[in-house]
Length: 451
Ligand code: LLP
Image (cartoon, rainbow, N blue to C red; front, side, top):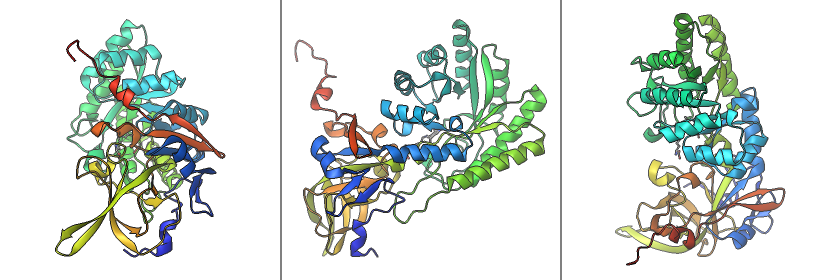
């Protein structure tokens, strides 16, 4: 490891929230709120969202894609009523992927007409809610769903606007579990096999569906922007065929989400403004070449908006040296959370930037493994990082870029309760989601007389 001693006290600015800074006393604050003070009030683990960071990412994305409504925040990355309010204030649209995500968004007062609904297997109850709530678009993902949605819309006396999800066969160059555009996976209708064309014809002919466009999602944590361009290029040819054979000018090309973010100090950032401009120009040029009206391009970023806006703070517990082979030791530093609040390292090999946030640290840096508190040896947050020797029990350790896909993928393994989630802005911290308690866990128990 080539890190210098002082480096561990620095907060890489492209990885930590934009309003994070280390104060003169060595503690870290976000938006003027001291993290140790947040911990004193709300305990650990705690997730802290920088509201201003999130909102400015929303604005940048809106500008890049020529209008806030063209940007659908992918709520699966992180959803709460307060976040829905921020998204609505910024004028963005919303993407939901389950009935409960839809219900949370609607209860938070998000306008249904700006919600796009996803899901590879939506049951009748889910589809009925979509139609009854007048959601903006339902994204069709399977032939049976198309038939059911048409029936439900007829029953409810509506014409439901839809998009057809197409798999254009593009390799996203990302982790296999989060790549979604190649053949042989569960989402959408295959372009190559002709299923996409059939779905478009069926949706067009269905009396109670109103076909507005085509959707695709290449994958997540994507850095190769050519993937988006290639997908757009292939889909535009489908738009041209729709125009030619069905006489339809479809107005919407939804290119999904996937914009990658840096997790480590050495990772670089995507220039989203440049990528967007390039993509929009390519769409215009291709549409002109094909002799069709260019459709409106919409996108569905989740991670790029919310990932870097939050950090998770843990308390350091045990610190021990473990012999890995004859005379070689590894230091294991444990924190009071782990795979229950962040499954990403275990599931995808995701990497994180960790810093002590309660004081300056010093001393010779030792190769360290940061582990969680769960009863599983795979409960590793960071397999190996250079950590100052003086880090000790009771210190507060912060992991950056935990705003996306951590809380929503959290579990109650080992009967852990979900962490508290706090938002910060202008020197004020406000609880966003309270910590779960043992009472929450016990409240699910159904007692029989014999128990
Ligand atoms: N649109 C659709 C249809 C999606 O399936 C997804 C993500 C998004 C938008 C948002 O993608 P983003 O901009 O956040 O990359 N749990 C994984 C990520 C799974 C993404 C699933 N779909 C992770 O922790 O990396």
